[in-house]
Image (cartoon, rainbow, N blue to C red; front, top):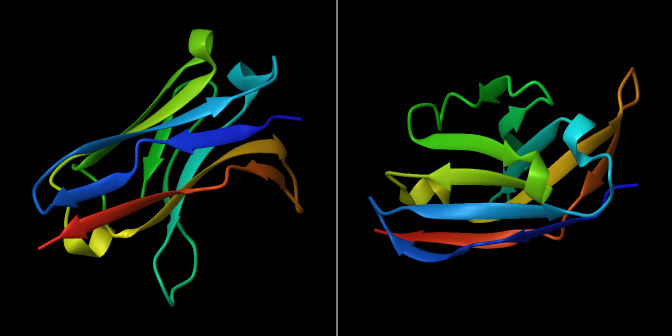
Amino acid sequence: QVQLVESGGGLVQAGGSLRLSCAASGSTFSSKTIGWYRQAPGKQRELVATITRGANTNYADSVKGRFTISRDNAKNTGYLQMNSLKPEDTAVYYCNALLLGGNTPLYSWGQGTQVTVSS
């Protein structure tokens, strides 16, 4: 099992930057695909970005060119660097780790961190 704790959220003006961190417990972090998701009020949770154990990345179209996902396996930590933030990026951001793939994937989720972008 991998337990995750997000940090780094906060209030920032439009055009600003934040870096979110996702600290993981457990020795298997380096073998897991890590993802960042977000959920705005009244909306469904949506994918922001993922990074595989081989450092292959995938981004939602809405954040391409502005956000960068990365990982430091030595520190058991994943990151989401967010630049050129927009008010529509306001949401609770969650990280997850893919524990088991297949038709019914199993994930471990963090508790979330609030990001608020003011106009």
